[in-house]
View 1 (tube, rainbow, N blue to C red):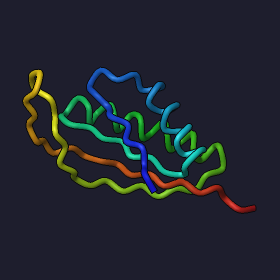
View 2: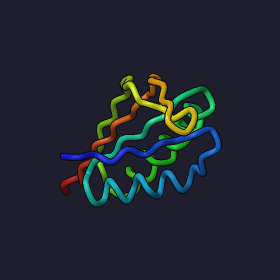
View 3: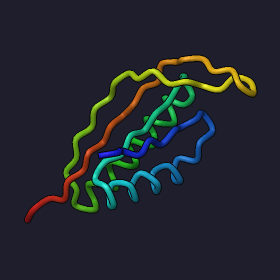
View 4: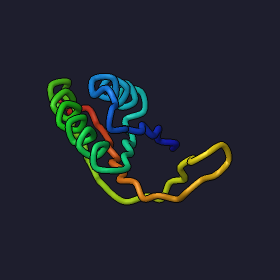
Length: 97
């Protein structure tokens, strides 16, 4: 299974990221959210709070796990630098009533 990765920056629109993550959960029942740096991490925490609230309201049960992952970032036209990102993996499941 290929889980889509959403990248959050320090100036990301929180609602747009939440909407994209909800679509992925609805379609594939899983999504990854990556962030690098303090501002992006803070934005990601705000995304996760809103995202998990909406998942609960929609009747989903979910599992969430943070971990570190190495990513290549583009510095100039062809140069890349490996950085460590925090990846949040969220796996959703509809509650059975």
